[in-house]
Length: 210
Image (cartoon, rainbow, N blue to C red):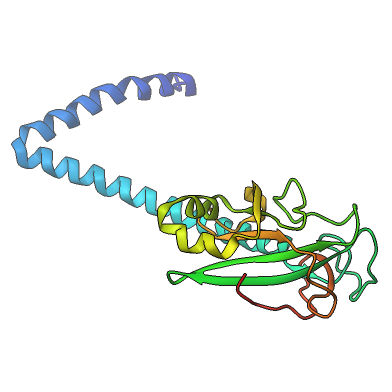
């Protein structure tokens, strides 16, 4: 009679414990050297699997990073991720944006100055509330740095802005990014274009020290 698949499966499962016990006895029979070889083999297999998982996740990590950069890129379009036109006229749903940045102990601290043209101006990704003049929102990493003793000199560069919140993960490319948005009514169209957030970056931008 032909053995059924269920019976074969049952016999296979019943052999596993015996084979595992047999392998453990062989490993133990070799003394310390046998146990060491077994341990090194297990560690090597574990490291190999971990390396494969990390390698497989790299494309997804890079794709997510590019998507977040794309979300907050500034384009003169009038709304988030709108690639239709450039140089839109100022209206209640636009804003002026001026890229800013500085360096602190060889680390870049980047951000942007915002001047909404009206109540419907688009908020940057990861920002719950648009910062008004004299207000700013910062990344968690920048918040921690500004609150620490080692960030005392950096705090002096932001004395004209009051922190009102932090930027969420959606608006950052990584947990260690030092990034901020600040509201400033001193910028005008001569300094920054009528702009919003989107992937087609156009128009003049300026890098300066706040």
